[in-house]
Image (tube, rainbow, N blue to C red; front, side):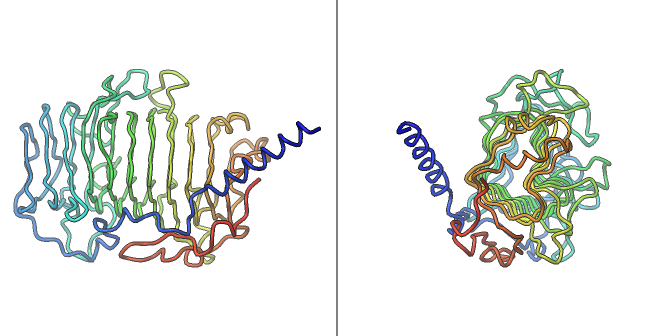
Length: 425
């Protein structure tokens, strides 16, 4: 009996430590967004473009910050060339002939801005006339591993076939350095049926550096990550029409310090999620079961700016499909119907428990919490949300957070201490 009591006491102490060491969401943990971001890009009066980029860049090219560039149509960086962009450079992107920047396999994009002088890709429309999907986006094709049977893929959107291949065996390749970069009003669907996303990373290698990137008002996904291996951090998605973060084709890695800000009335007919994780491409097949997408997401802030007048328009924060593996840690999710929804590939409670884990996190939703296709496992599926804190009743965004709709730097610190909320158990 004494041994059993000791075990129970140890378990309780471990549980309490697990809860009390969770991130304090009443503190300002998003200081990294200040100085280089722009939450009102439609009001910014950018200078007029002075020099047009060529549509084929086959030699090492350097863009200077004392020139404002125009990008029109598809601009391909090819033949192992590198495109280097100086800090503070502005690239205006054509909406009449929607611009796309495509970094082909073997080429490089080095865009290293600073907090004081970020690099900006934005619409060439004037202030207050820009909108989601004015231009295409940035596409980076690497030689990292993807989990298709062939080991390769074709960039979506009907681009030039000789420049559209991605994937390979160079898992440690460095294809890009992106730091303190803003991508505004991308995601065009007019030029192509399958439109571009804000930032598309295809088969990205682990030596690539992607941090402090903000994608605003994308007409498609803000971030679309297909295969490869990398740890990305300090990413912001602002009011995308489709998914904020779409991750697929066997991507392996971490996303740390990410923000998704959605609006209940801004969505896609196909469905839009803060995070959509797809284990493999059903059309191309996959190599083996352990090659499915496996992503760890830490310190995420996934917010739908909904309140009690419009929350019924929201869906789940996270969509998991085709056996993808997901771990959510130290994160907050608010304003959605549910935390996560699973497709039919998750056939039992045991499968879900192996595929999805969430801990040290907080959620404020108006649904049950977990949405499943197989009704037979619906009852036990809430167990995956154990030991996370939540609101007993749905709370509107302005009542829950300090300053969530600021046009300068939104603050998503909880007005009340985390310890005032319920614990799922």
